Image (cartoon, rainbow, N blue to C red; front, side, top):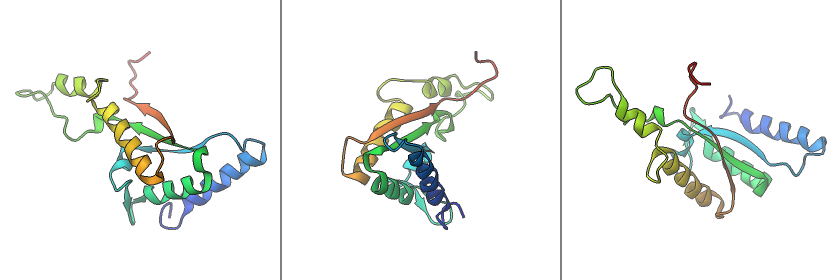
Length: 142
């Protein structure tokens, strides 16, 4: 129902309309997606599962530059990360890869990919891109 019957898009428009009615018509609007949304051409679109591409087409058409693309990137979900060789319970290599911020690391690479796909969808390289979250929460943090 959220995708196939347009519920997400209808709710999004309704909520933006409420903000506009309160005088926030120039404030950017967004809907947050995970990196899985990048798995498509240009964005994820699988009937019965998710229609991220359709939502983003609608949002950019309706709200133009006011719409901000927001992505949550969680490198620890990368299916290519493995336990350390010869170990049944150590993952120092995977942790190093997931927490890396160099230009070829997961989050910077996904951010570049998102920017390219945004341009593919909109034809513009100037759209707003927000990174909502990276990493993961831990009870030991703080």
